[in-house]
Length: 379
Image (tube, rainbow, N blue to C red; front, side):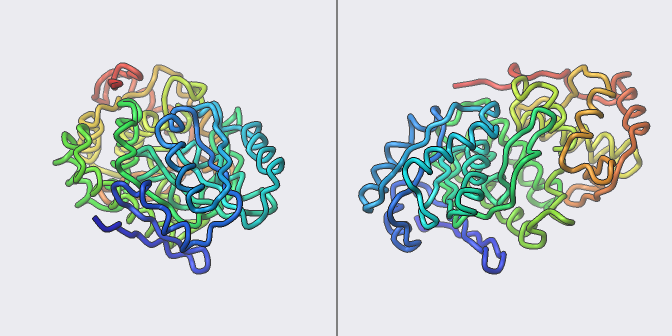
């Protein structure tokens, strides 16, 4: 089966997203075409390494490339400057040059770390994304956002740095734990809400198949998510305007991740809550109809995600939102749905947020109680 190709058009920084089942077994030709030579670092984590590191090292060595694995501890807790420094130490000890490549083999955390290290080592070396999670394949591997977390907020330190290519092998999703799989569905749902009502309707119909990881449905969802993100990124590479619509669900979502110490919720779980609660807030502000909220709530629930806020005070959530990188001139700028497929960006004040939050906790917004680990099932 031929690879699907999704172009990301950014002038001299343009690149391709290649999507093909079994792609990891067919990389030799692509390595030659890109001119990968000499040394290549492979940034991955322990969980991914046990499934795919040996295969990639073997492929690189067969192509005459000196592969240097850099295996990290898994999870958001690794997304720190200390971890980036460790990656840089390995590159320096092995005398990587500006022409040396770095591969990001893993999920969003690995991609962000490897991309940031590539951006700053010798002022920039080429890197390739090889995403192995649903969130990374459908969202974070595309667009050039790299970076790490700060104790006061998520992704506060980083750079825009585009990969040379993105290589997506949907077969790698078979080894993804159920919790991570379900969490990734939140980012897929996001694309339908912000840009494509037809795609959202498709997700409403096919969510049972996505939950079961049916190959054709998964491939279609990943490809369409990449197409939508590529279109947005091409129109606004550095998030000065339209690209900010990709933050839908993340204003509240990132605050929840931060307050949970990046442990109680994985990223997609927090975003899933954010998708529903930011729609509910938009409805409270008169920006959308209640039916919009309920459609979003139903598909989020169908994905197996929680849709309710944890029992934190509004002031605590608001304070965490103020540390988000999307704050502009001291204002929390959110993305709010007007209808499925169309959103608007506008700031919100603390008073409105507090009054809405009080209404939510009086029970005026429906939905199941807040849950974290209980809403997903591991293999």
